[in-house]
Image 1: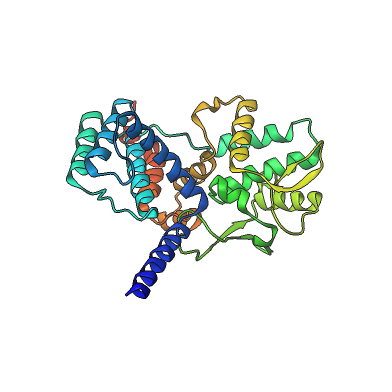
Image 2: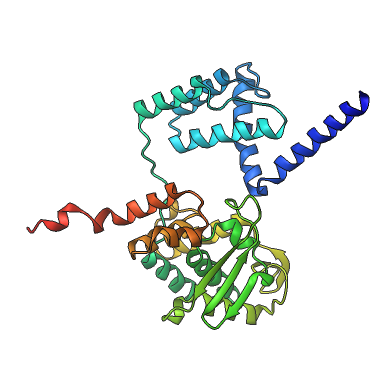
Length: 318
């Protein structure tokens, strides 16, 4: 009997390890950050956060709604609370009526229109590249920064995906560049994804040519593709952080004379999807590049891109 109990405990521990491994590191960190806020709410009000119960989670969501949190934030926090319970070996019914009906009520009373961060569209992208090229910096720094921006936009990359790239993930071919993405947020089974970036007619804004120049001047032959600089223009072995990518985007937007407060590290990715939709790219081809598994977000980009294209006012002659 003791052997059976020991085996069950071992299986439980192994199962928890599998659950933890099923999520990307950045995703787990985001879940923990969200759960920390829930924990603070519970501690302040004398409630139990782990294991918790639906009525407590429902109170927390109401609390967030009074703080003018977006509906997307409420949904993300709910997912995070549920995932942390699962990772710790607890069950929480996140679809309990007291939670779902509360969310529906909040949505009806407050609405769910999201004013998210703006996408970097093609004109802004060109402005950013132009201002990078005008910087009085060493050529190696200019080539790194412009390559990050162009690759991030053209590949529809998340910022953590950009900094996770290695030299070994690149395959330059006659048509352009193939980039192997070993793992991403939406690729929980680690199947991998290959993104193809063709050569652009305009070489100034071509991500493939820019990356070739960066690799040549940096002399990178293996390991992290985008790295930090030590003193001066000396390149280190350490890869950039995703926070650095976000700061670079903000910095160059400001230098280009664009108000950067409504942009984020995600603006390159959303900019690609929106620009592709504006140009008439099919939903499935956008999803193939971005790696989205659900059509919901991609359709939101397409809807936004078509606000003026399919506008009824275009038919009115004044």
